Amino acid sequence: PKNPLATELLDSTGEPLATTLREIVTTSRCFSTDTIVVPGIGAAVAYATGDAFGTRFSFSVRKEGTIQTVVFLDLDDEGINKELVLYKRQFTATADNSAFAPSDADLMNCVGVVNITTWFNFGSNQLGIATPGLFYVAPDELLWCQIVTRGVDDIAAGSSPSVFMVVT
Figure 1 (tube, rainbow, N blue to C red):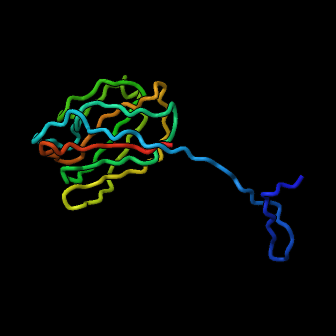
Figure 2 (figure 1 turned 90 degrees about the vertical axis):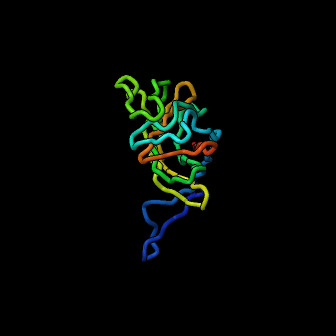
Figure 3 (figure 1 turned 45 degrees about the vertical axis):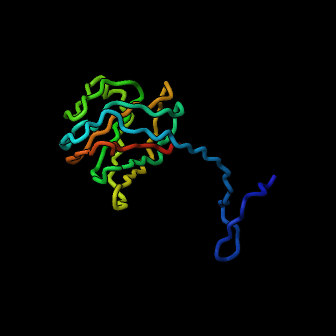
């Protein structure tokens, strides 16, 4: 039987081509994680590039999916690139404001790194965004994270940044 959704393609002489176009119906179930204030950031502490920026935290996610977007809400208006390092299991966090240095054992559970390098400056704050398309598997429905700064942050009291993800 002929597929009613198939569209016959014709060549320049009006003859049918060997291939047809078929409509593919898909559903996309995107969701946004909770917005998390990055824990453990020291107020008025001078960070160096490569330092852990805050402490370990986690996002509740499905067992598997794709991280489509990461949004970093920079209330302190610094716009300094960040790396969101993601793990499928809990890991030993690097102390805030120390050189980020995961163990070899922890690195074995790393899902990937999201590089936040696109910034939108709104005068008194900034929004950083990344669109990694990063596939993950999270057996416990949690992605464990720590942020690494790639600049010299100095966060004012009350201006701790927040982060969330959009996942399919």
